[in-house]
Length: 428
Image (tube, rainbow, N blue to C red; front, side, top):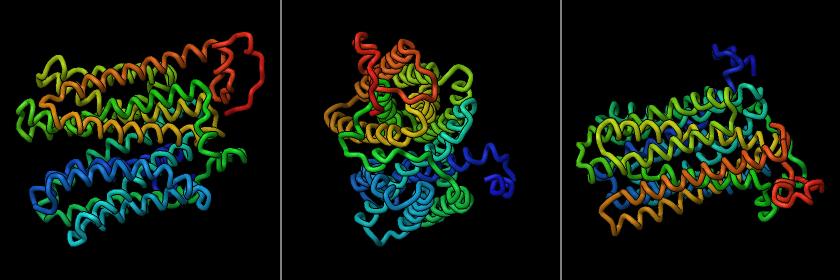
């Protein structure tokens, strides 16, 4: 790794985080969120109807959920680093494939689903390859670097698409594919040498039921993280339409506020990680959920420029910022050996909540004229996330667990039934 970093002219301590940044930028920042900038153009240039363009966006979310299952199947045949390589290659290929208009909607649905599945693989695999090998004192910052790729991808797409759209949509797709290909090539050698902690034999191919048998603090973290998916949906699905259709703001203003969301998403993970390294992962996660809830709720009380700016930045800042801290917290309370399983289950819960919440919100808006109920639902979900993290803190304080030690099922017995606190239970 040191030789690869030196060849790239980068401090070896930063190189793993930057490779993780390239993975999340490729898989989610560009692979998913670049479509937000492209969708209106697909309709304006008559590639697809508005309804068909909406299906393509939904296909990416569906692919994200399927990708977690695909990763479990690929794990039996491929090393984690090889999975990351393959996923980055396929995301790049999906953009090149979408440059061909002649494939029709079925062709685009297939490739947008592939991009979504690969985005899920990259979000799951990259952190578990990097964070366990990172010093505890630096995990917050390194995790922040990894997940800042989401926001940087939003900014990159928002910058590149207007620059090249005059050359046509095909060139736009090819340009984004070229960006992903460059990132894949730059990090190829690192992923070839990256390794993850070995899992115990029972965890290599666990039964579905066993995989979901979690210690109580991990289950609470899973619930909080799934609610987080509901918390950011109004901004990532409807923010521009809310600004233009309900608040009657001009389209350039909507684009500006979306860019502010992207700027927050680019800065949020690293700065949140710095705070986590100073005050701890749990307090940071609690504060992040609370501030994100505030950002989601702001449009319910006022719609001035300052309020909309604050809402854009806060939700953008903590959407990927929470991801890095949550992954680090799963590592802290579960240990390196169980990190992959816990983080995978958390992403399954996130993707299920994301897909289900999006379907529910779209159905609600079919009969409503105001987005206000969606912001209220999402703010309430984030407040419930705060309650879950607070309960984890109380449970861990009660049994006096140390960071980095895998939590036992005594969380499910000791704090609730003190008479059984001395019993020994295996990790679940």
